[in-house]
Image (cartoon, rainbow, N blue to C red; front, side, top):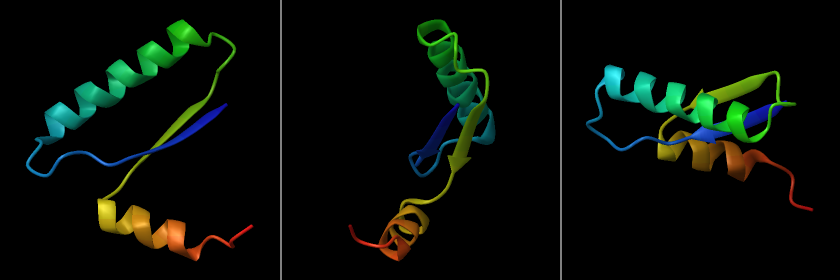
Length: 58
């Protein structure tokens, strides 16, 4: 299983984002055929930073 958080450039079209995600999934499956489930979370950079800041520090 792979869980990936991705921040795309501002101004990208939804078609560009969909194509990038599809390419990423293909690359992961080609490199790691045992990865049968791939979860890609798309969010803004500020949203990603907020979620990172909420994580407990270890």
